[in-house]
Length: 254
Image 1 (cartoon, one colour):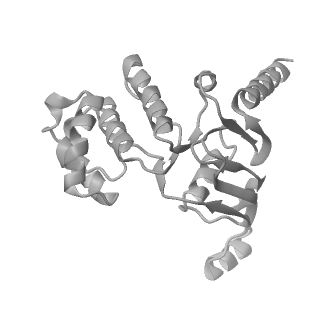
Image 2 (image 1 turned 180 degrees about the vertical axis):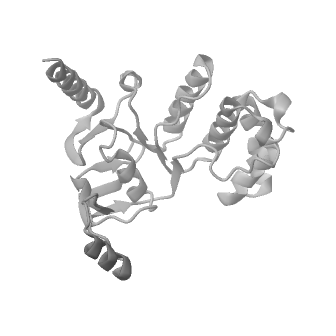
Image 3 (image 1 turned 180 degrees about the horizontal axis):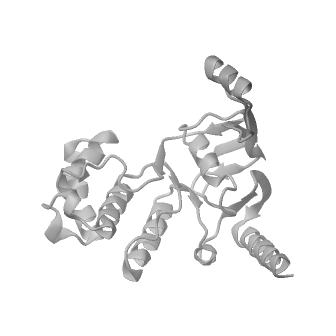
């Protein structure tokens, strides 16, 4: 890993305007219907996120559900606009947000592999070279000629993950979707992360599986309620999050 920042945020914030559930009078409801503008309230999804990620580094993004983790990744990936602050992402970004996105259930497994590659700018020749690894990783060699609609959800996840892993490039952003298949396949998924790091890729990884983090060196970003609670050594930040979760459980029981 080199000290070459590829991601940096400065007071990055995101506010959503969402509809309210306030009770309306007949008159006010009619007025809102005519204007097409119902009352809204602000939901602050992220507040003043400040991080710096170096090339080749792994950063785990942790926190409770609804903390703003996915919102942060979607902004950094260029999928969602931010409201305030600024951010810099230097290099090509590969996103793993939804397995099987872009797959067509009417196509065969092998046709979907080539379709996915085409959607991500890879030539047929490039996918020809990647195909054996995809088949081997997914362990679906006998089913590659079958239509995706005939696959179980687990088989579709295997095919999608194997295809995604073989086509990742540059900065890799992963929402927590790696726990697919049985235990042995989950071990392969964890090994795939090791391979991404060994190639010098940068990884931002949303996870609730804190046990996984104990095997890696890197940083962790702990977000709660859209606020940055801590950013630093992965094991230290994960430990802080675990203590906070334990304390909240204790408070609920008292």
